[in-house]
Length: 159
Length: 147
Image (spheres, rainbow over the protein chains, first blue to last red):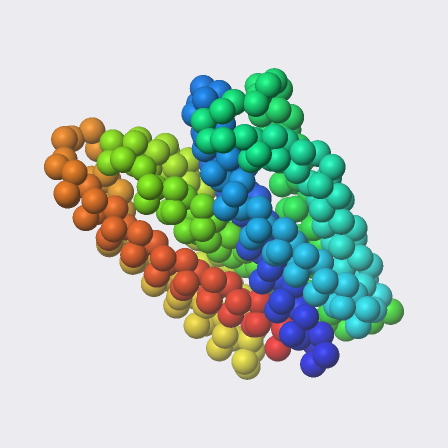
C-alpha cells in the first residue's frame, strides 16, 4: 500500500469498525430488550441510552467518512470505486439519522425522565425499523471500505 | 487467499471491538446508577444476548487473524501475530476471570448487596481492560493490512 494511504486507512477502518460494531450491538442487544419493556421503562432507558450514544456515534461516523474521502481521493481503480460506495452508504446513514431517528430521539430527550411522549409505541417501532436498516447499511459500508483497502494493498487497485 | 483472511479478520474484529466499546460506553455507566436487584436483572438480560454474539465474533476474528498471519510475510505477519496473541489473551482472560463473575451474578441465588457490588466493580474493571485490549488489537489488525 502507498505510504500516503496508510494513516487514512487506519483512521477510516478504526472509526468505521467501532461505529458499525456499535450499530450491531444496539440492533442485537438494546433493540431486543427495548421490545420487551413496558413504555414507561422503555422511555427511561431509551432517553439515557440516546444521551450516551449521541455524541459518540456521529463523531465516529464523521471521522470514518472524512478519512474515507481522503482515502478515495488518493486511491484509484476499484479501490476508489469501493471507497466511494462506502462513503455513499455512510452519507445515507447520516442523512437518514438526521431525518428519521433524531426527531424521535429528541421527543424522548426533551421530556423529563420517566415521562412517556405521545404515540411512544409508534415511535419505538419506527426507530427500531430504521435502526435495523441503518445497521444493514453500516455493515455494507464497512465491507466496501475493507474491500477497498485490500484492493489498494494489491496491484488490482491500480486502474 | 490472503485478502479473504483480511476481510474476515477486519469485519469480525471491528464488530467485536465496537461491541465491547458500546458496552463500556453505554451499559457500564447505566449499571453504575441502578440498584443492586435492577443491576442483576439488566446484567442477565444483556448477557443473554451478548453471550451468543461476542464469543462467536471473537472466535472468527482469532481464526482469521491466525490465517492472515500464516499467509502474510514480514511486518504484516508480525503485527497479525501480536493481534492474535491479544485476542487469545482476551479469550483466556474472559473465560478465567469474567465468565465466573457473570455466572454468579446471573444465577438466581441470593447474594448480599456488598458481594454483588464487589462483583460488579470487578467485572467493570475486567471489561474495561478487555475493551482497551480489543481496540488495540483491532488497530493492530488494520495496521497489518496496510504494510
